[in-house]
Amino acid sequence: MAETALWWVLLTVLDLVFISTVSLLEVLVGAALALLGAVTARFARRAGQARFGGAAHWAAALWSFPATLLADLARLARVVLRPGSAEAGFRAVELAGGTGAAWACTLISATPGSYAVSVDPPTDEPRRMLLHGLDRHSSALERAVRER
Image (tube, rainbow, N blue to C red; front, top):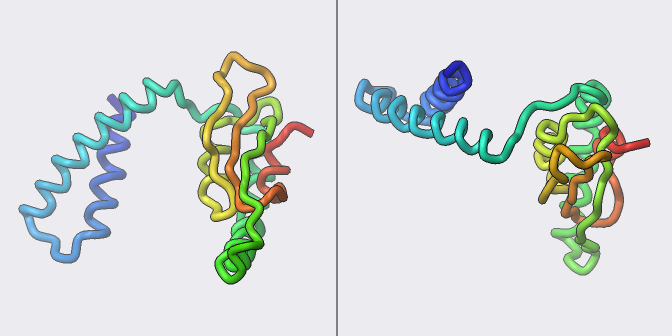
């Protein structure tokens, strides 16, 4: 119940940020749709067995995020300006023990250089995530969360 309420508040606030005219009708419709989204998000998380996971390497990952974001933007600009320079492909990254797959995938996918496509089930050790990237180079963020 608390998770659904948290999602509802988050989605309602997000709706209020993006609507241009805040009227009672807009708020009511937004809140109702946010409730639907909150219930759906909870069921989707439970169906996918997603959880935050361990916090190991969280600080190192957050520390490397800004540098990775800037480096990936530069790589993306290079690929846009010279389309033939792309070496896009898939690669597997083994997560370090105690690293939560949910937050690691979310953080890596928030950069323009890589996107987490899948993760091994929680029963597999070490857990691997499959990434699709602009090129074959691993980012500082990937190095922060992978098995050393």
